[in-house]
Amino acid sequence: MATFTSFSGIESHFANIARDAVAEASGKGYEELRVGLSSFYSSGGGTSSGIYNRTGQLRESARVTPVFATNNSAFAEVFIEPTEYKPAGRDAITILGGAEFSSLNMRGTGGFWRRYTAVQQELLNSAVQSRL
Image 1 (cartoon, one colour):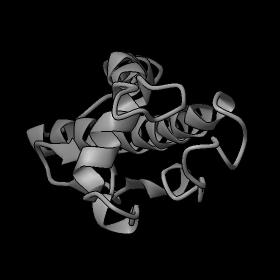
Image 2 (cartoon, one colour):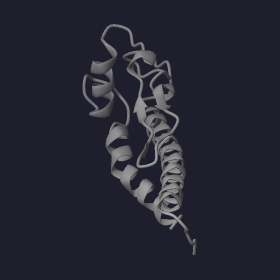
Image 3 (spheres, rainbow, N blue to C red):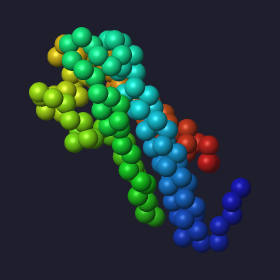
Image 4 (cartoon, rainbow, N blue to C red):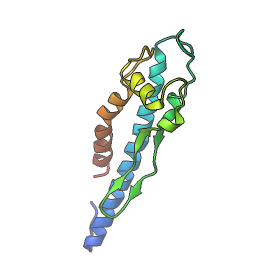
């Protein structure tokens, strides 16, 4: 167990725990989202659904920011970058919603964002717990 001689030492210790836990959780979350986005393509016939040609852009649209940390907080963002996804015929936000909710006659396994958000807090809790 760590011992401290000042409040700033305690603060620094927990800031490091927060930073490292957020880094771990956001990295694992990013990978979880990429797996989910890849699973969209697991149904509907590979690269061509018969309705439209699949480009694989959705799979490549996951992003994660570096960790930003201060003495009392740490955060990173895992997200889908709509400007990196350039579908033909409709705007990216509409297509991303159609893919997530399996609508707009899109063939694919939706729910990738819902699955990611269901595990994100669990990933962070686990990362923090492993450091305490």
